[in-house]
Image 1 (spheres, rainbow, N blue to C red):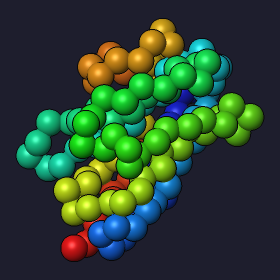
Image 2: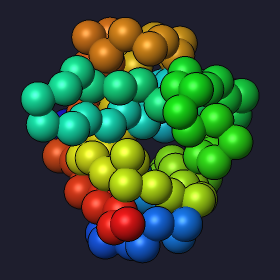
Image 3: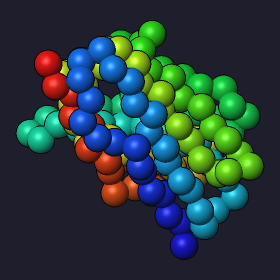
Length: 124
């Protein structure tokens, strides 16, 4: 069974940093592309970054460029989202998702597997 589980969310002051972790199991980690999305209640889910099986990554959201980075640890089957210089507009539930054909895409419907999400709240 494919499972994704996010952790590392919480409350942080503006200007602070958090590192989210996505633990993956139930599939060959090196075959899937993994992306991070976020969603604010009442708004559409926003694609942030994605990492290919070969480690190459792609940014989708201008709002986080230069502040957020994605990385993976194949040995630990984890993908990380390092978030720096956080601001209140970054407050959202953050999700990781797995794309089974190994290709990154901003289209959330292409991702077959999702974690349960982790809440990030940034105070001003």
